[in-house]
Image (cartoon, rainbow, N blue to C red; front, side, top):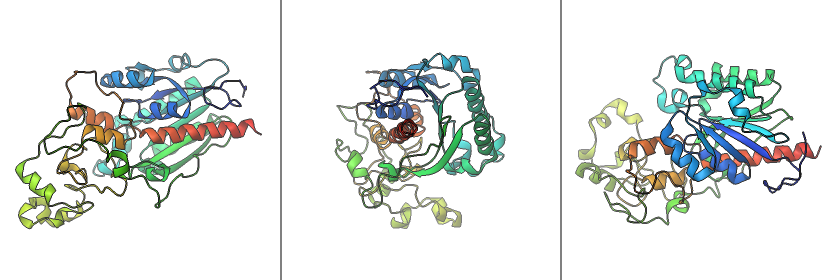
Amino acid sequence: MQKTNSTENNNKNIPKISGVDLFCGVGGLTYGLKKSGIEIRAGVDIDTTCKYAYEQNNNAEFIGESVTEIDGETIKKYWKEGEVKMLVGCAPCQPFSTYSNKVKNKEKGDKWKLLNEFSRIVEESNPDIISMENVPNLSNKNIFQSFHNQLEKLGYTVTYQNVYCPDYGMAQKRRRLVLLASKFGKIQLIPKTHDKTNYKTVKEAIGDLEPLKNGQKSKKDPLHFTSKLSELNLKRIKASRPNGTWEDWDKSLWLDCHKKKSGKTFKTVYGRMSWNEPSPTITTQFYNYGTGRFGHPVQNRAITIREAAILQGFPKKYKFIKEGEEVFITRLGVHIGNAVPVDLGYIIGESIIEHLKSIGNE
């Protein structure tokens, strides 16, 4: 591994690292890696509605194509001689999500061919470092083991672990699988940075945002607004307590499903977050009070787009739409809910830098 005098990572004893982000979305992983000092030059995603946010915030090129249409030569043009070449990404995770338990034949779905495409692009482009982030359930599936084995055959040392995001300073109870692979030797995530005594809380993350009433919009931030709740749902959220369930309500407010035996298992829907702990996992429908524990801790409404983005680690300044552009809440819900948490990208970047430092010191 060639050494350089680059200071762009604030690490003079390691080479410059440059990367390409597959399945980049609006740039959560890219932004986190850049925050750690790694340069991401391009992101690939079939969803071209992500282009503005990705390029506006990351100073990187957005390639609006499916990974099935990308070959190794396309990737390699973003790397330069003497740099550490990195390929990262998060293939769509819905088939193995805990929210998709009823999906049959999960490993036969077309989306999971995308993990094989990731493997193909690795073989064709031959990066030095790889990171793949996904849902924890993936780790015990055949398709993941095949991906893992293929990387080893290509000469990579591979490690992976399930991450509880609060352990690394994120204000969200998200659990993710993180795989790291290196041509230079053993690579692994840095040690946990937090524990139960100092987890980042919802209040620390969004407690300073402008308070909003049900249905109100901020005059300062077009993404800080809440859809108006129905009269019945307004009564329900007023009867909800942080981390409570619909069982706290008067029975006159119960839904029909709550009265059935099967409904007893859905305790987190129509729930309210707590100020004093991390948020639940931010899904693509976080703006809907009825789809999870997405009620604001103290205000009688669901969380806003901006609040969800912050809980995903995006800074308040992150631009998701052009100024004056119409806000499509379902589209932004997908953009934000499917993003890799920014701070997880940062931790991955820090881990790669520490790995290269250790190699350089050998």
